[in-house]
Amino acid sequence: MARTPAPGTRDTILTAAAGLFYEHGVRAVGMAQVVEAAGCGKNLLYKHFPSKAELAAAYLTLSRREWERSVTEALRWSADPAERLISLVTEVAESVQRPGYRGCPFRNYLTEFPGETDEPARVAEAYLADSRAQVNRLVTGAGGSGLLADRIWLVVNGLYSAEPAQAQVAVDWITELVRGDA
Image (cartoon, rainbow, N blue to C red; front, side, top):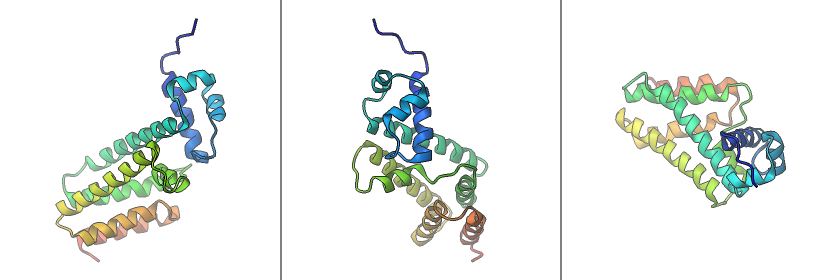
């Protein structure tokens, strides 16, 4: 008779995998490592996540939910689109300065698996497209142009690979661009 998994088993596995994937990269982490980190059996892992691609997609979906929660919190303090743009860039700048920062999980996945069209790649690409659309909406709401949206998106992308000490420079530059001080 099969045992009934403990409540929260799926979340335990996903949390363990997320930590490993973020620290080492999806490609570098084997399912045996996830089993060991989660403290579960291989059969239980595969019951919840039949393939590594499904586990990676769940990891990226979790990452998206966490990021959207932090962005929502950062943006809730202002109704002004210009201030919201500055808040968005500030949130990115703060995230890249946190201890243990190892890059954007979505960009990391797409870099590890260039040209891939699997479910994790679709999750990552959808996140990036939605993030870009959010920047475009905020720029439009602030009366800015497509060129301004392109510039802000370029800075946001740059933040993910820049030295953490440069984060404040990016925030200052976006503030100048958005407020028209440049």
